[in-house]
Amino acid sequence: MNKRIAGILFAVLSILLLASGCEDSQSATDKRDRAVTDSNSEAMSINQPVPAVERSQLRQSLIDIQEMQTTATATFSFFFLPGRSSGAPLFGCSSIGDPIPATYQLTNPLKGVRISDSGGAVAIPQAEPTGIFSGPTEATNTICVDEKGQGFKQYWEGPVMSSTIAMEWNDEAGQMVVTPGATPTADFAVEEN
Image (cartoon, rainbow, N blue to C red):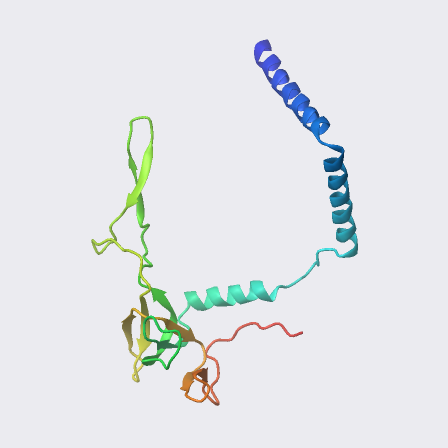
């Protein structure tokens, strides 16, 4: 037991000696620069303190988005040509929630496999419950809603835009715009300034 305590004390003393040696080996310029930087940081923290806030709109927006994604929020989705950064959507529909990337899955895409008796392991791809392996894609699945309120899956390999307010293509503006008189399908907590 005495050897163990002596070993620990030796390690602590060695670390302290090394640390003090590093201090002494610094040049006068390095010490002066560090002192100025420390002084500046202290002055800025006094004169420009980090604001103490009771509420963050950024945090609230993320909360609202996550709540919308986990509930059956009514949305409108628009499907654009793959590889194009402009132009009218080819298709649009009333929808439920956000478009879902086709590579999302409920199961872990990897599984651990032991490679040695000593406990070494490696992660390898795991088949999905459908028996296939997923790969990278830009495709999405969207649950669209028909005029009777029945949901149907719309798969698309191009960009998909989703909104909680009805939108339409405006030829003059060359972009999607909010449909006149449309009201949002979801209520988000927007902070008043």
